[in-house]
Image (cartoon, rainbow, N blue to C red; front, side):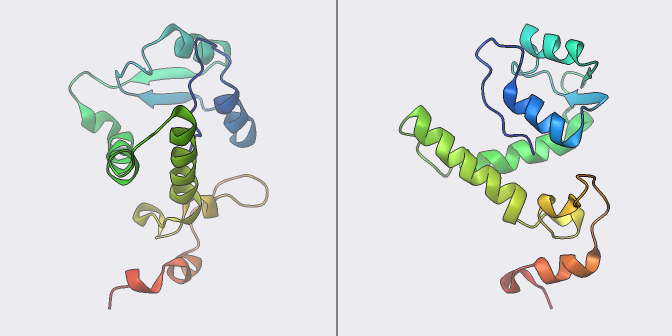
Length: 144
């Protein structure tokens, strides 16, 4: 659910900090061994905030199956579906996809509701209300 933007060498990621201020800083972040996580900037950001980076074992994508599934959806639904004509164009298209993914698209793992519906008015998260989940699914997606 993070709105990721490059930090350009700045360990104080305003986007990541903004998200953490809204939902709280995690104790641990499970990450793979990709170059975006093996960096001094990310390590410094986590250290300064008391966040532990928990690296998955090399060659073991099942250690972090959730992010592997997310990466697959990002690739197939956004990156492979668009031409990016400029950095600004890429930012606009990625932001539109991020909003759709988090605010409109039903996720089967959470009762076929969008992730944003998990946040209650106090900013806490709770299990999905299944009565809302059934009503939130588009007609074309209902089986039966």
